[in-house]
Image 1 (cartoon, helix red, strand yellow):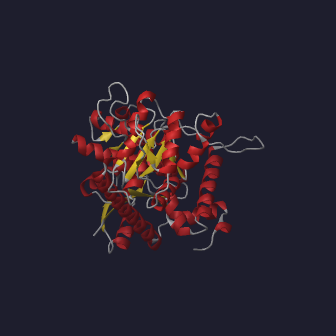
Image 2 (cartoon, helix red, strand yellow):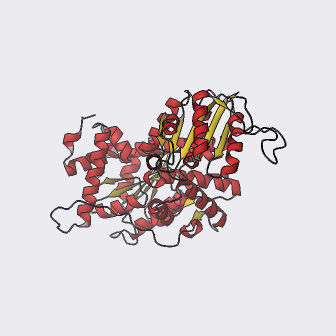
Image 3 (cartoon, rainbow, N blue to C red):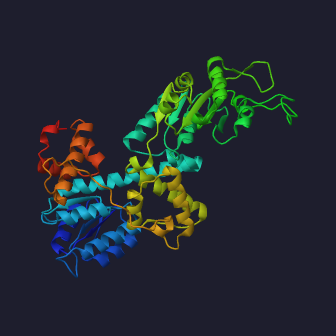
Length: 464
């Protein structure tokens, strides 16, 4: 039977919840934060209900927030449901920002809170199963973690990969440095009919121009001084497999012509050779430059661009991937902790704030490197900001609100507007489906109904 921890200074509420939930869960109860934190550490329940007003200051929230931080520090994946009064909305939102899963307003309706708690357990189990699947993939291919993601853009990337993998079309992968372009190409190869053939990568920007032609196409014995033997190039090595041309935008003009010829005719000539060599290889290419600008400036051939980009996949930068940032952070933390042999439990709340507000100019590669550094440098079970090389207080992400009358905008106005826009957009994306919208926003159905009623968004529903 699953364990559920109830932390509340009101004995009547503890008794009410225990009576209502005892058939479904092993219910643990605590009347103050210290006892609650101790019970949590001993029993590690998946779900906790928490009243912020706890002794010795039941009229305040300091003890409640201390207890919340202690629980999430011990295990950040725990689903904490805040039990609050009608006048505690500001503190409730603060708790959610700190990492609480959801909130439920008093008075307590046993049937309603059963649904909220059941969904919390269900979501915990789904996330745990995903984590296990992700770790299994990491064990098979450690770098595969970088391909994980649940944000809409990455889901679209995954869908595209699945559609094109079994074909033989050329693919151009674009995106900032460090976004995982080679990983996408490896994923395409591993799902293709060529998966048993070689995957041959070459960085077109890392090899001097005078050596690149020989690297790509090979050379015959005596082709130039020092060419003492016949050597195959990367294109030939990719026969019956996949050739990945990284940083294709750096390819010199004379070699662009030769790659175009290969794409058209599937034949090459080694440097110093005259015989055409038939090669059966699929071409995947990647670049972080603006190809439209490069074509306009005549730095890249337009005909080659269209040959390479039969399908184009654009990878979003890490800063645009929302909750994927913490998903990847936890995956990297698990991997490096196992590699180094440390028992890192997670990130402190301060570190989570840094991770979520930092701009990540180096994208996934930077995130991976910083977490690897943190695991090595950390002296405790929790990763702190300085372990990751963060020193300055993270800047709060600015929200710009259109204010045509130039009237002062209060924090409450800003919060309400952002809330309205988030809920409205999610409802529209899910075509008015309440269940799907609540799941996307990470709230319970009752909470979503409250938000819809509060902001007058009922016209957007389809009553599902």
